[in-house]
Image 1 (cartoon, rainbow, N blue to C red):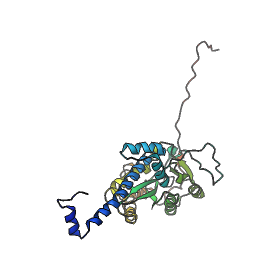
Image 2: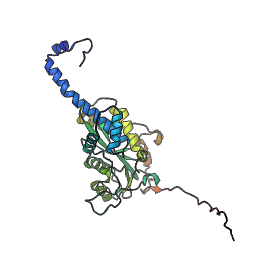
Image 3: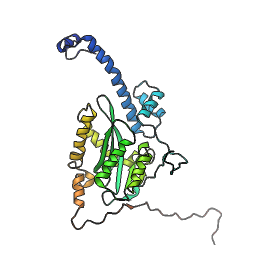
Image 4: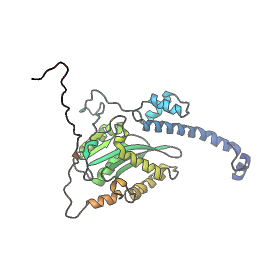
Length: 307
């Protein structure tokens, strides 16, 4: 620890009434914590940026950032934070709730949206505080870009995104036919999460491997959240962060922030314009649109003859 502002360590300790032994002991205890946080941060960033990388590839990426860490430790950290990639199994007993998970196809890319509650998109990200990592799960309405459910927690268990989903269901009360889109993480493929969606008549949709842009609306929301709120001020505790998150999501993002995709309206303003007294049509599920193709005429092979 070097002197700061021209003051020696002895002088600073004398001014604050702290013994030098206590001062150095504090930094000796703090340094490993900061080093561990920096390592976990690097592992988190690598795993989130490359969601279907295993721990060996993540280890290489982290080592390239200058961390002297082995694959075993990276694997342990990824296990603790539930970041290990989920791989599709060839044979999945979908009726057996105790073995494996079913991976659902991407339906969202084929939907034509015309109303709210036709398509919800969900994702999870990590947020770094002063002395710990916390995790945020969100659910957005894809038509209006409104954040309809979110939850903050200290682990990546299924209970975290499930809490965000419950908030969304409680606030929106969607009808059967809603499509829920997410990545293929264990939380979204878990039996508890799938059964809750099936219980409200929702249809599941998941991004394909290695294609984070297929959940681009959630990615954009999380980028905006980090840029405009998380990175704008330091947070020390999860409770402090949760209080400001509620203010940013509910009062700023949903009510005030303008979206170019919505004609420079906020999500709340956009939804308000959908409601016209006496003219509001009955809710219908989203339409489907598939790419058209034309069959190419067959080309006669050499030596063949036609009648």
